[in-house]
Amino acid sequence: MHVIQDEERGPMGGPGGRRIVAGVSGSLGSLTALHRAAAEARVTGAELWAVLAWEPPGGEIAHRGGPCPAPMAVWRRMADERLLRALEDAFGSAGPEMPLKCVVIRGKPGAALLAVADRADDLLVVGAGARGRLRRAVWPSVARYCVARACCPVLTVPPSPLQHAFEAVHRRNAWKLPLDARELAD
Image 1 (cartoon, rainbow, N blue to C red):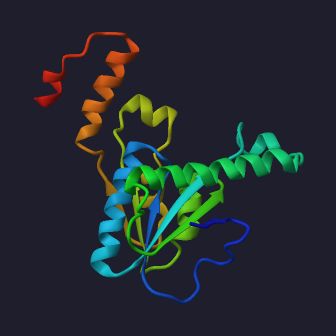
Image 2: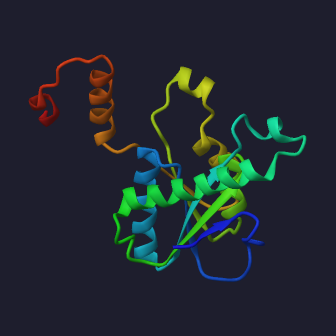
């Protein structure tokens, strides 16, 4: 599977069929959104685009003075690998069993997704994620950004029902508390 880099892609808005654009970060919420996007693409016969946005460590401002090309190439390759790993986590080694275009773009996630989903007949699918006041203040919501600015419909997918159980197990592991498997069956 070839991953299209932002330098290779050219203009996204050319003629073509309907596209389902899914934002992918590798998180459980983005994998849930990717599954929903694949289901929408199967039902409508649209083309599925998996998009991962990346920024250099420290953000763009830290590299304004002219970043060294070698680290940028490494970070770009790491972004490619992250997208491919997320797709394998979501669909296994067989893939989604449908046409899929993989796009890796350097930039902030919301702006990158809107640069790809730039046609009125596109559908942008993003994970809504669990949000609280503190999380919203520290980490801005990509879903909110896209809903407020998109020129196409945006489908925000709620977290997987398993996410709460996963986070509970993760907290228990972090605190080294014993785990009773019967609690997960509730």
